[in-house]
Length: 333
Length: 208
Image (cartoon, rainbow over all chains, first blue to last red; front, side, top):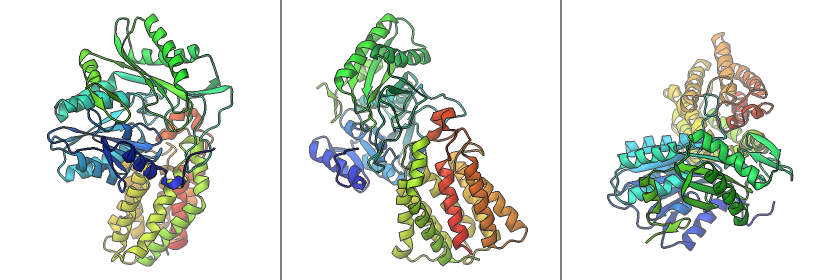
């Protein structure tokens, strides 16, 4: 596997330094703690949003640091959660006195490390609330798994709750909104290829040229089943149906429809997929209030995509439309 | 009986063993996880092994606490908090001890394993590191209870850990990332149970 690297061991820190060089108006980085911080943070009186996770999902999370979204992102090693010291450093660096909301994707390591950090932050007097995203319908939510994974909804949540924090909503309101967004969103993904962790040097799983992996996560972990590759319209149906059914979406309801690329699939194909998703939703009588298409929560160079649907109310749409100014997502005044 | 020097030799042996098996651990993790267990553990234990040269430790428990904090802050993933908690809790019952007996180490091992359960909420048969730690603790307590010295009890613990590790192969994972695979996680030895066995085997070679 060919990669543009110097030393695989330095990939995270070098990428962070590159981000700082590319986006000096939006963010600064703390290379010791591997943090991306909003330029000008802490913002006095504003609830601060801190997220983080393993690297390899860019632009998530560092690319979403800036006005209207995150105040800080903690970068772990590739596909490995950040550690409590990092999360604590981010939390204290961006606390503007109104408390800090931790946005955590539901993976065993992320949850444990954020929990330990929240315990330490509480001891140093910072008010912390945590919300865990778990929107992946590919995983059975049962006593026999670690619970559903946090995937696409995390992006939508960071945008919507970021807008709420920006307009001055307090910590309890932001946390309640975040839980509401998570509860109303579901995702499902497929992979056409595996991906290669730089330090490992070879693909995480094997997939033949004519196969696809249904129900993948974002860490190159294999999915629920390996199947023969099918036309985009059939793949779209395999993704949309379980999401619609799990959400209990009914005719007349509105959603934000999000087709996310895993990093190695061209936009050309993502738009083919979005077209199929939009057609399926129209047939089901579901209104697309807003859409998002592109590579936002990736899995290194994995080819494939995920579909996220978020059932929205007027408040969520208003917050979605509010201005955002980050390297990865930017619109409005 | 084991003194501070012996505990430092244990951590050095852990680092050597994990480094020697890093690729194997990553291979096991590639099958049912995300292919980083070897590199993460190697990074953490290398940092722990360096502690003895960086700092003068006044006691075994201060040393083990520092090992735990170092693992928490260098390993990441779930393994960092879990192994970190293990060493932090291991330190507790050894607070007053300069030369650890089998009985004292048994109390420490129980505290460490209970810490892993508290942090990870795993049960026997979930296909996790607990499936190596739990039989190891049982074997250690049984051996120490019938009068074995530390080294002998640790040998029994290491053998039991290895059996527990081997027994994870047919299990269907119910915790951690491997649980996402459901039935497909069966047929693969658990990476966490494998690294846990390496740490206990290193103890059997160094603590006496």
